[in-house]
Image (cartoon, rainbow, N blue to C red; front, side, top):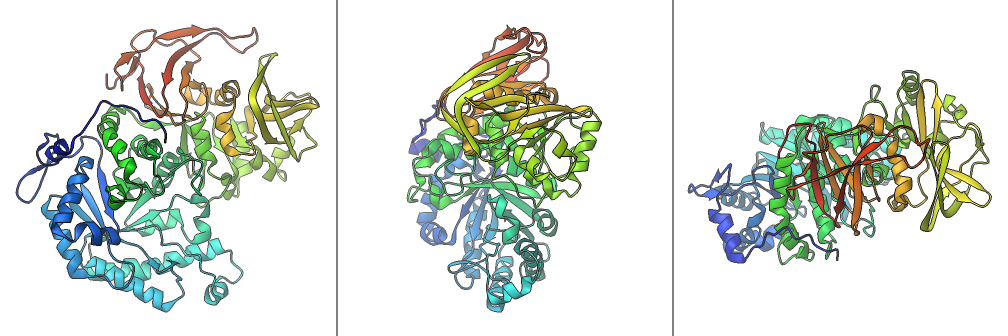
Length: 615
C-alpha cells in the first residue's frame, strides 16, 4: 500500500452524520422537508449503484439509511440507479426507489448495462435487440435521463456478423452498426415513451480498442444527448489495462472537445484497487484538474464497507475537502502542448499518458494544430491522410514538429524520409549510459540500470542526437533534432518499456522537456512521475504520481519576479534562484528556477506574482 498524505482532516461516525444532516455549506440544497443538504462549493459528485447493490443496500429502508449515512461525506448531488440487466426491469420498484431518493433532495438518473448474461450483445441477434428495446422503454418510464454503462460495445463474430462485415474492417463495420442499432433500439424507443428524456453514452477507458469494438467518439457524441468519460486508470502497473494515470486527464480533454456542452461528467472506480489508496485518489485528481462537470463514483456499493475494495474509501473521504479546496484555486484556462489525436485514431498504447507523467503538459486536439509554436504527433496522427503535407507546412511557416520514431518510420514514403541521416536502423540497443548535448559540450549520465531502445544510428553530420544512449560501439538516438525548412523537427525514440520513460535520469528528461520551452514558456526539471498542469499565464499545478519524493523546479528562460511567488495548497512563499548554464555554449543566458520538494502523491499549486488569482 502506498503511504497516505495527511491532510489534517479527521472524521468520526458521529461527525459524519452531523455533516450529512446539519453541516453548514455554501450552495445548500433542500430536501423534501426543507432540510439543508451539504454540497461542495466547487465540485459535484454522483454515486452509481449497480442493480445488485440496489437489492443489497437500498431496497430495505433501514439499509438505505445506513448506506447513505456511510456515504454521506461524499455530499453527492445525484445518484444513478442501474436497472437490471438480467430479465425485465421492475418499473414499480425503480419508481419507488427513485421517489425515496428525490425526497432526500437528490437528483436521480437511471442507468442501463446493454449486456446479456456472459458479455456484450450481438447487434444482429433479434432476441438481444428486443431485450435492449424493452429495457430502454422501461427505464424511460422512471427517469428523465439515463446513462449507458460502457458495455455498449460488441465483439461478436457469429455468422451474421461475419457476413454483415463483408470486406470491411471490424472497426468500420461495428462503428456503423452501433450507430444504427443504438438509435433504433435505445434512443428512439426511450423518446417514444418519454419525449424529453436525455440519453448519455459513457465511453470506456480503453481507447485503442474503441473502433474495433464499435465505439465512434465523434459520431456517437453527436448522436446521443450527452456523454461521460471513463477515467478509471486503477493501479498503474499491475491492472491488466496498464493505463498511466495522466491518460485520465487526456481522455477528458480529448473526448469532451467533440462537443463540450454534452460533457456531463467523468467516471472512475475502485474495482480491484484493494490497498491502493493513492492510485484511487489519483483518478479523482485527474477529474479535478480537467474540471469535470461531475465526478461519477462507480460504485456506491464498492465504496460501502461491505464492498470487496472499500478500504480506499477512508483515504478518499479524508481528501474530499482538499479536492474541493484545490478545485477552487484553479485560475484561468488550461493550456499545454497540442498533441494531435484525430478522433477514431490508434497508435502507441497510451503514449499521451506517459508523456504527461514525464512532466509535459498536454492539450489534446482532434483537429490539426497549425498555429502553435510546437506540437506533438504520434502514430495516432496518421488517421489524417494529409498529415505529412500539413506537418511540412508547419515547418515552412517556422513552427516546430515533435514526433515519435514510430511515426517517422511510417512516413518513409514522404519527404520526411529525407529529414534524418539514419544508418543501419532496426533491432534494439541496451545501455545505462546517456549522452546529452549542451551546446558544443556533452554531458555523460549513468543510470542505475540499463534501458532498452529501438536502435537508431545516425551519421556524425548533421549532428542530430540531443540525447543518445551510449554503447562502446556507438551513440544511438533517444531524442533527435534537426533544422528543416524554417522550423525544427524533433524525434523521440520511446524506450521499449513505455513506463521506462518515467524512470530515465532527470538530465535526460530535462532535455526532452526543453523542446517545448518556446510553446510553454516554462519547463519542469527533475525526475519523471510528476505531472504539470498549467492554468492561465501564471499558475502551475504539480502532482507527484510516483512512490518517491521528487525534487523539482519550474524553470524559466527569462527573468521572473523574485518575490511574491506562492504555493497555495500549503500557504507558503517560494524563493526564486538564478542559475547559470553549466557550459559556455549551453545556448543562452541565465535562467530562473522556482524549486519545490514533493512527497509521494502530493499536489501543489504554484501562483506567479505576475497574474491575478487565488492568494
